[in-house]
Image 1 (cartoon, helix red, strand yellow):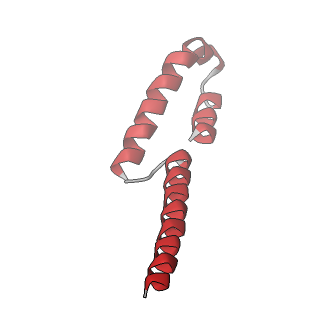
Image 2 (tube, rainbow, N blue to C red):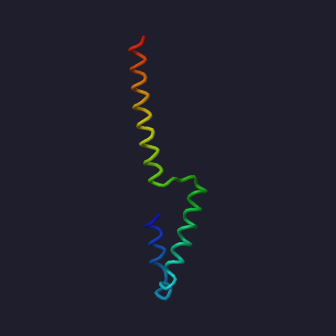
Image 3 (cartoon, one colour):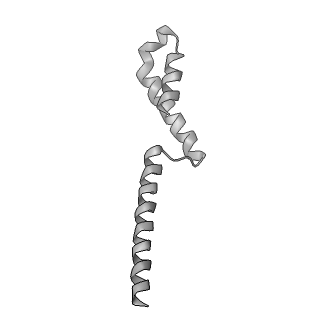
Length: 71
């Protein structure tokens, strides 16, 4: 998203640089809103869920091994 945001800001005319901060925030909000409607997650969210799934799989494997020992 940052790359896209920077591309939009570079496209501003030179006299538009004065309002760069305001434009940047408005574009960021518009992009976040559009991405939210598309059910797209951030890389950070994806990585967090991947780590959680990996821990869950490891725990499941441990429990399965423990259950097998009890049989």
